[in-house]
Image (cartoon, rainbow, N blue to C red; front, side):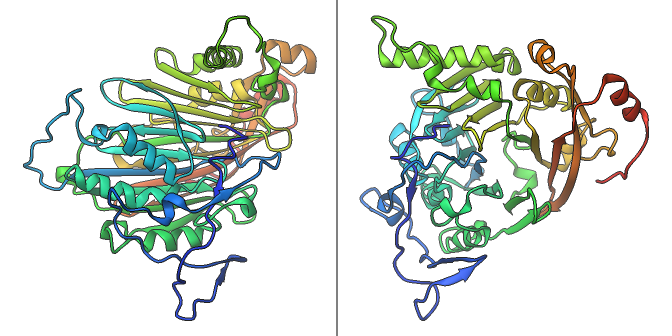
Length: 451
């Protein structure tokens, strides 16, 4: 998660004709903007506003860590057609070449930095977060002031060229910390929905609905879902559940690990690329991130002057971590589509690694995937939803506190479209108490059960 990639964090500038008849900017959610006309499907020689508009944004010393996430699933237009593999044996979306993927990322104002692959998925570390490409699913996460939704028309067109049509679309994000920094069409959720709806002339399958989970006066989560899955013909896309942890005010000592200047950058005979790879690996191991993804192929990246991104793939699952360590806006995220029966051990390990003051957890799953989760902190009682994490020894020696306790402060859930369940909860670190008090409180059956 690069905090100084100015060439990628671009504003959208002006946008042609307004959607309203008088061509007067409308004001929604306190933000004034012009509606953009629906785009035509891009051609090879077509230069669109989405490709070219924008102006450089100067780095202000703060960075919008929480990511925007777009997940698009496709299906064959003709179910009887054979999806012929390319020369490398790849099918579906994995046949998109590097130039096409670069153009998709350019629409979102980010660039591809590196890639790792296995037989199931290609994972790309970006200048702003990550891209995962499966045969019939694409997941694109971008942070900062990127313009993620601007790639949707191009995705539709590239899918058609491969004989694919949209099956399911999900877009989600947390409310912004610095909303005034965002570019069109991300200046409000209302604006994002209008932008998606403007593409219905390209693809009627974008006719979905938007939802808000959580209190509007605190952390909340915006979700858009358009579900057109034909259940009898659904392709295997491993979209049955995705867990995301957005962690704020991470421990200062942890944040300092991701400051590039804290590492030796003057080794004789070392190229810049070799230096970056070495420092990236040092950050991964020093923080303990590698232990969160045992057995996985890891692609990590340290940024100057600060920041870090990591993708890990293991068979059909991915995990991704992005870190913004700036003081006053420090943030780390962890997302995975691993199929586990309980998230408690995984969440405990992530919390012990980053030690945030608070975190937001979201879970998007279909009903079948949700039923496979036997222990879910988002549906547990107030007592059972607590996380008590052992403090690392070096921290305990300094603070005198052997444990960190996180209490759930809010939870919300909704079932959307056919069988997509969306859940969101917020946890806050409580003031340190002694081990006996924590154990006593955890044994009491108090509070309301919220599901």
